[in-house]
View 1 (tube, rainbow, N blue to C red):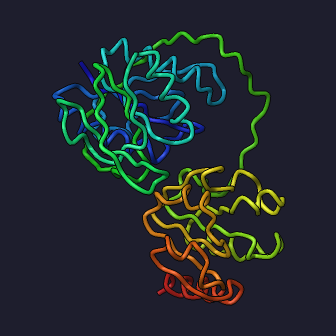
View 2: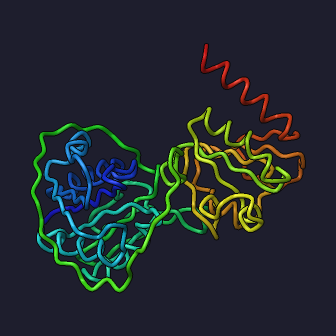
Length: 317
């Protein structure tokens, strides 16, 4: 038996979550006394994965130009069957949420998403998961022989465990996809919300799209991604790709800064997994303050420029 980890990548580069799931998979393999096998699809240099304990890497090159859940699930399933994997580990990203259930169905496996810790027991197999829209945790027992685990971002971390690894190629057969991508537009030169350790988000308190310059400047100083609340994207002030929350993109960053966002329940549910939350708002009764680790009651147009100035001075010191 083996533990199979899918190390996701984008445009040939491994995502940060790839190193986290490989680190997690290495420890699970040790717990189960199993071999660790790491799968890559259309990725670049696999030697990066050796740093995190990937001794055996299976490399699949296919002609799917962009992410396709059906194709990726089929490939993962084929490799899992070929390598006799009884445990498959995938990240709990947006892509991971679409792929993992398909793999679980194909393998007749139990699936636990948003897992935040190593199994507390392997017999029975029990994992700790985020529950209730990131407001609590539960311990889930997977009773099936085969298991699919979705690891929550920034829950376990990437831990170096250098090994001498090897790579083998795998020829996977693709199913009829049914969906064809004609074109894909991507933002360039910016940190994406999915990969960001720090997210600077703003709401209607900014009063208009013309005032987003200071948000972008703060994000640039911090090396952060920019985001926004749902009303802002609905008004067309910012692209929908920046909308975070329960109805947008979930965020599990190390630091989340909310500027001029009152804190609707849907927004809070989508960002509760972030480790440290900072709020800047003129309204001391804004719901976001109840969920915040740190809060500043003040005008964003006064606070943010001062914050940028202090951060620049700190970085130059």
